[in-house]
Length: 190
Figure 1 (cartoon, one colour):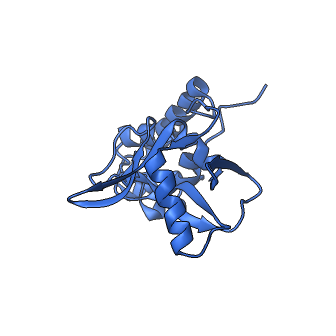
Figure 2 (tube, rainbow, N blue to C red):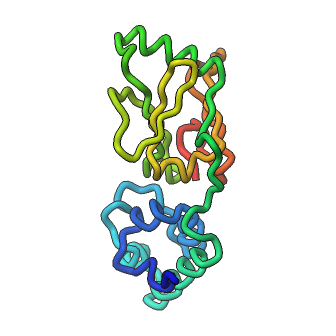
């Protein structure tokens, strides 16, 4: 049986903790650490984050215990995995195919991933990719290949990607059932 009492320690970076256990961001926020999307969280230990925000020393052990308790309750995968981690509307597939052709990248795929950042904690990222990485799932949508890494899948389960054109502009819209909150631009979520 795996020992879960020390899965998270005060020496781990906030980014490392959130990557493994995304729901830990909620626990951190409940202790006053609302900067889980900050670029510094990739380098700053949980202990230094608490100290840097002027929180009392006793909060360190309490927060570590609260995160580990959440892990015991929720397990290591907070998002129920579906057959495909995401879906694309016909409009999104057509736009991606068009962009691949315009950029002379017909033999490329599109990487969709979640990265730490933005004003809400995580950001969606889309980019051209020649071939998948070893830990990627490759999804095929009418000939458009989508690459999704294992860590991103934890946060994308059930997400729908659409392409919309409005009077205010055009772009990809992400409808993620796992997002508890998002910023006004729709590119960042918590």
